[in-house]
Length: 461
Ligand SMILES: *[C@@H]1O[C@H](CO)[C@@H](O)[C@H](O)[C@H]1NC(C)=O
Ligand SMILES: *[C@@H]1O[C@H](CO)[C@@H](O)[C@H](O)[C@H]1NC(C)=O
Ligand SMILES: *[C@@H]1O[C@H](CO)[C@@H](O)[C@H](O)[C@H]1NC(C)=O
Image (cartoon, rainbow, N blue to C red; front, side):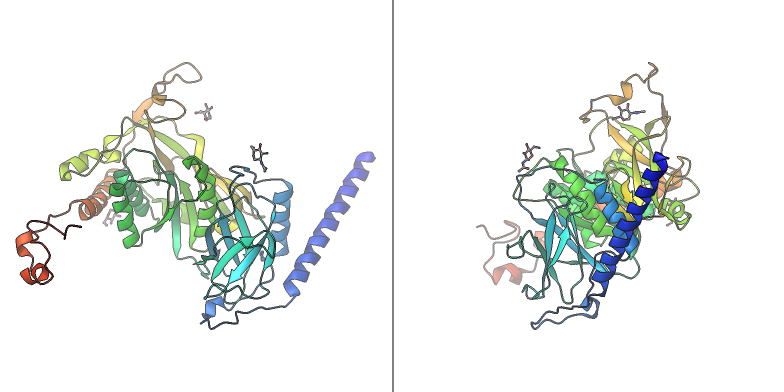
């Protein structure tokens, strides 16, 4: 009896909340005030859009409200920092901003809009709320080209940042990859080229690369991928320094926003991981064969024993061939694991993303686990640089027996293609040809009184 009464009360409360949210959303959507930039801006057709709300349906508003009630995103790190902006992205119906702060979840912030001349668009500010942590969603304003945020309406926010265009009707890419911030002393150049070429062969066409620290030598290969349009590099910097690993969740939030409407699917990987399909299908084929209601795929992990560091620098073709990680390290664990599994998601269907899976999805969006016979994460697990202990491959298992190892190289044809792609890229970037000083036209240096190039490559200053 009492049970029934409670159930009825809960049900009524539920209906009430639903009705309230629906009305509120409806009211917001129908208020028809439009503010426009008054200055001399040349407003492009894509930027002639004004919206009143940050979600497209009341169902989505309700989901967002529920995720907040359930406290699905709490970090509370570095609470001594001030608010600064990492990125701002414009979508067909809203704008989202990523912050470098991690202690503001569910706090109110105002979205602030600026036109092409960086003048604030009069009356455009909108009161929003930080959710998930480090993210603010804002409605669209006609002519807005820069965004900032502030607590109060009269407070000044951080320097506005230019919005990144993501208002695509259809995504440009089928599959993209977010690479967790790189830092540390181990050379990265070969890891980067292997990672990018591997994921390209599996069907990825854009890689969002987050950088904590990197050497000048390793940066050359990243720059070359930016040049050819394979990679976007996001430099992580804030006046408030922090441990590099503290950037990881911020980069996940930013990359979720960065990939939305840009790529149909996005994966979140570390530089020592890559995903492989099997001999019959590439990763992109596995993805394309999923039902339309699937919004998240979880991939098992194959741990590969990585016995040392990768080579410091490129020396020659033979050295490169021998040093390629996938040729050098092929010893793996026998069984794959769902421990530290990685996800590939439809970014616009995910509410809150985490490192290994989505914490919140829109209603009706399905998650599936991929069989290791279909596709898996190949994880080069170092036996030296593990914060949780070296020589993991020698640790006895729960049953006391040693870990069983086997050989699992890449498929021969894939390996051949990967070798060729790596070779081509590395030779183009690192196999530099010294200047032929005698072949430089005399007038080029003589007329400007520069030194003879056979003596010095530039004037000395
Ligand atoms: C910041 O976080 C620390 C550690 O969690 C806590 O002790 C402190 O009270 C927090 N300060 C503020 C202003 O929230
Ligand atoms: C999974 O990871 C956890 C935490 O790192 C660890 O305690 C556990 O032993 C791992 N399980 C397996 C099967 O590796
Ligand atoms: C290897 O490259 C060839 C030529 O581009 C292509 O036809 C083939 O599908 C590739 N195979 C794999 C497994 O990537």
